[in-house]
Amino acid sequence: MSLQEFQNNRSPVRDFYTGKIVLLTGGSGFLGKLFIEKLIKCGVREILLLLRSKKGVCPEERLRAMLMKEVVFVNYAQQPELYHSKLKVIEGDISKPGLAIGNDDLDYIRRHANIILHSAADVRFDESLKEAVETNVRGTEHLLKIATACEALQIFVHVSTAFSQCVYESVEERFYPTNVDPQQLIRLIENESRLDELEAVGRKIVEPWPNTYAFTKSLAEEVVRRYRTKLPIAIVRPSIVTTTDTDPIAGWTDNFYGFNGVITGAGTGVLRIFHIHDEYKANIVPADIVINGTLVAACYASKHPDEENVFNCTMDENYTTWGDVRNYCMPQRGVVVVKKSLWIPTYNTTRYYHVAAFLQIFYHLIPAVLFDLALRVRGEKPQVLRLYRKVHRFADVLRFFTNNQFLFATQRMRRVLDEMGIVDRYLFPCDMRSVVWSKFLLNHIHGCRMYLLGEPWEMNEEAISIYRRRIWIHRCMLGLIYSAFVVVGLRVLEAVGVPDLRTFLGCTLST
Image (cartoon, rainbow, N blue to C red; front, side, top):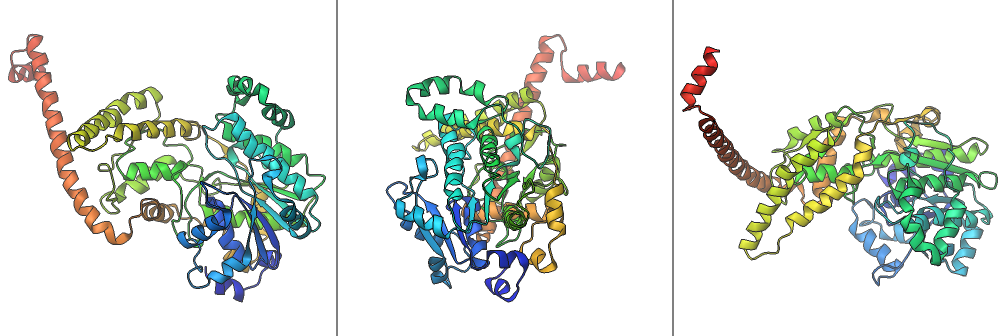
């Protein structure tokens, strides 16, 4: 959807953001980039972008590099001044006390911020409890403290996750009690003399949540709940966020997290066996549905501050299963091909953990050893076995979400969507019922190939030639393996007293 279309069409949601000053955390992340592009189209006056220095690069340089690199900023090449005029860097760090924001910047935020969009989070499932609490819990609390001093604040939006309450099979659009007081946990991580003790019992603290990410996001929601009487707030809970559906471009992503990693791993021939229940809901949601849904929900919550403004942004009204995903994607092998693949795509699934663990030996570990041996012979550094260690860690952290069923209520989000006018529905498409899964997943494959693996469509013919050659080699190898099984089987039969195959078959037929 073009910038011109936004300028030519006015609507209640668009008008809510026009002329506003928005403080955005997580602006350099996946959702943050999409928020920037959408807010600029909405005609915001200014986006205050909380950024930190990273690897010796200052925030301003990071922003310039990001704007030039990412194709999601669809108007940057033609109108770079538009982006630079709207974006103001606020140097800070969400994981530091007070967010490490300077006094002048802090004063500017307090006097001018109308909307706070908190999308920053430590999304690593295997992060230490200390670091996850610092970013996801303490960072949220310190941002809320800043929000209470903002003179013109209209809404504070916290982007959470639908799996913050994954200890329940059915998750309503409401706040849930926590088993740990977030304030006490914050004080505990700030007591350096007790950090070793904290990490030693960290697993017990996190239980029954599957990882520190989901656990600390639930605590962050509790922190937000405690500020309900002081601030107008909204919480949006997306499920597994994937590539964009259509807005601003189809199939865009910038990371291998979650579902993106599964599709990319299978498409490159790396992920060949996966522990998953094919009949369970996939619980994926396109990123642009999340962005538009968040902006629409924030607009609604600002006008209904007395409601419990928690919104589940999930696929429950239009769901697909993991088996459906497999059936949509696998016919694309040999059609959409990745040149950088390890081998041809061979994606198998099982609901049984021990079966998956056993088959990993044959599908992953033995091929990895053979590939590394070939690399050593060629004088190159072996790396495939190391790659599979990462694949198995990745599969381990996803196992909880791919082998459990969840029901996410969406009544409040549905009410908001039903109240949207025609123009708002066009400018902010966020109704999951409009998603055509077969089309979305095809765009998803194209997007992962193009934006994650850096292979434009023009390379597809060359990749197909390589694929056909590998198919021929693959079938020859299977023929050799099966022939070896037959030979071994015949030797076993001879060892147990069956003289030859003809005699064995005759005995079998006569019975």
